[in-house]
Image (tube, rainbow, N blue to C red; front, side, top):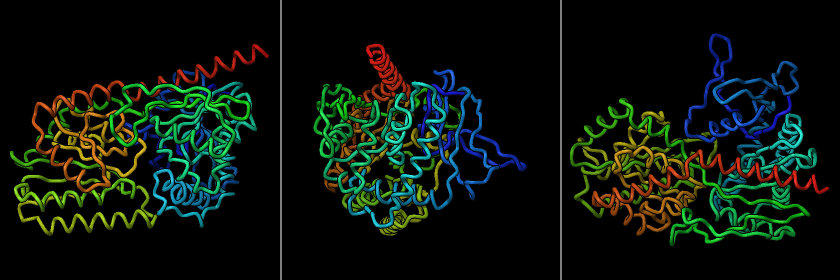
Length: 502
């Protein structure tokens, strides 16, 4: 059955588990991830499809089930699975995406590794995604492509199916032209993105950077600009923009440039925050800390972009320069490895462990350890309990497309208390201006920010948290979805006008 909406994403919209020799599909573990929101769009159309890859020992095996029909709480939809070998996945995802693209997107040129990239493999995988999307899409359907792993899909898809409405959303930062143009394949990537009807980003800065890159490589005209709404302006912070291009003309076509920050499911977090289990967890954490102690909570992945080592070094200086805090403040540092097989991430994990060990060795005692380092993922229900128990959430990435942990913390604080310390290089900083904003590249800024948070008076904490909760509610995941639905409708109306005039 032809689909009105085709979502193209590198992973499947569920997890597969083996039980008693049978494969069962279950929901993804991350309740605030993007996957549940994307599946929610299937309820808005007669039929939808999802394109993803699935590991296959032999892609030519006739027994490989390339398509399955799924019926769940989100609706009825087709999942088209592309059979990729372990080598293809390694080259496409771990090498090209993570060793070449990821460091450039986050402006870490020194981590960039071009030599092992198998570009023909990346093209081949992207072509397979495009073919699958073209086969599933009905006439004039919306095909929504997600993230940098699939940069070439829009260009291929436009060749195959010029009738389609093609949208792309970028989930990471998008760097300046000086940084992006380090990539040898820059022109091919940008020309593919300019084949879209709409290209979307979290915040205005990333959109402006994309337009700057496009203008450096191709003949592109900006035909429309718009002022940035007040909700996305945080005065004096690194990523703030005052205006943003919203329409380009490229190769005789108009390309919309959209801005929509991804949010969290506020109602879901509220429900968890009010549960008896969460309250029990909060009480047990506070009881273990003691009446006068304060808990600083840091949650992120083990990645050189997350600034984990710099944060630990700031905490070490805090204890060194403020002896009165010893025994009275504890840092719970959660750093979960997402790519255990990659040397760059293993090096960061080792450095984090060494730094945390040094701090505990220098300042710890039998009764008190200043750093609790956790390298395993914490179940979401339990994490909400830690959000509720913490005095401060310390979220200081060196670069981050958005950062949903900061938003989860704010949503969980239904008590209206707590302080968020947030890096100005996280996309979320442009909207969460009532956080204590800090520059993680500056020792003075980092040290001052955490001291400010620890010593903040209750009235100021509550005023800041009220503002943070209001903006997080306003720009929640539903708002993100509604903005994109509006965008798809506008593209459809414009397409209808063009066809009618022709």
